[in-house]
Length: 265
Length: 346
Image 1 (cartoon, rainbow over the protein chains, first blue to last red):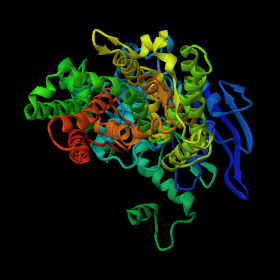
Image 2: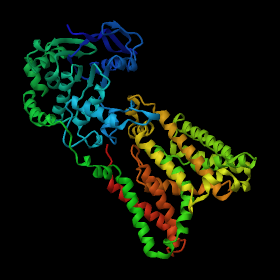
Image 3: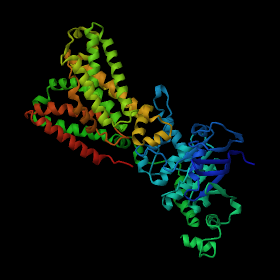
Image 4: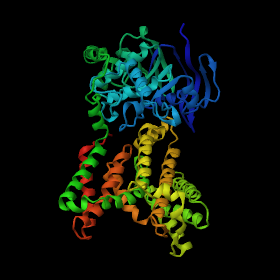
């Protein structure tokens, strides 16, 4: 069995009286793509923030490669090889691709001067690794000239630097067109092919279904379903399941889940 | 939906990904150079056109060396503040306190020299003063969470007021300066060329490297571009912001000292006249107001342009009343040119 990169055991998080997460178990193995699905307010973003160390859980245990960790923080998370691509991508759009990839960790030599050639070389390597190449731009191109999907590529290329083992992608396809979404999936597949693990968060079930090996459905702060890809026949299955979880017994006036789905559309 | 995405992916991306190398028009070095430096080159074009007009208007004056010699004596003073201001504006801030810092640091220089110490010691003391004042102004803006436009304007009045209160408007003559080594090195002439310009050029080149090829410059640009992202990627945004104000403090101290060495006299108003020409130089040079990008070389050429307007208008035979008009004309034309020349990405 593949090595377990990170495991969350019985994680709870409450903001005052409000429970965002109530006893969540989640794990990601090496080379695995886990799709995390859930409606707005299900606790997805809280879970991501806990994984990336930005938010500390109220209770529960975090294990990195089987060992429990104490003093979990953003720095510890990154040290453990976990990189998060946040929804807003955190790019400086007037700068070049190279400057964005090395933002905050510039490669420097003599007296803090940049190793420009080394940076370009490394940036090219990272971009190639995720299949982020084109004849219309170079590592010198300004990020502002790129499309939404390509900008996501810059963020992903930055994330895989430093031998990151787990990449958390927070809604990477939000507000992207179909072709742009396809580009992002292309990058994600390349990352998976390199043996890294991915936690893919989305609320578009079709997108998540396309990419993930395993699905975790979050509902109102709890894991409602964990299923391998083999157990789920189609995206419709997942949609039906989520409908059932959200409205036990079906929506009033509808007779089966298919109706519910049509109604949603 | 999922079915249709697959073939699309293969046709549009699989093909491109298979190509091993990037090819881009800017890969050609000359074209890449022009694209990377279009703001600075635009400023250079403005300068050349302006000088051509002057030369046609009055060929005799504009071919005499004296005119250039006088500009080359005073221009360096401006350059020492224009260049650090490019960093400040790139970082998304502004510093209007540099004239008072020039006055304050050069006052310290004058005091040290007047007390009989070596001018080199005076220069060192001035630079330390400038550093401290820059740190003070920067900390006030950054840690006090104040608007840099208003806070630095306030500091400019405050520091200048302090100088005036203590000196009661009296100037200090530094007669012994002319015989000193410091004067020979920093303020004399070599082959008829004012030596200040060489120091200023070295400063510009070093700063351009700092801006384009150093971690400091890279972080200044990123912070000015998107401070939230910079923070997320682990850059100490506040520290970077304070550093740019410190840089202005150091530049202003050097500028103030140079201006005193030209005149052998320190006035309580030292530096005051530089506020508007220096600001104009930064923006004429092609550094936009919104932060994230800028050009040190352009700023330097902007300073040269602004320095020649006054000299040029008078030398071209027009009365002094035209100076302000032409100042404004050049600023507006430059801004229009830069707007057309560079796009703002969001």
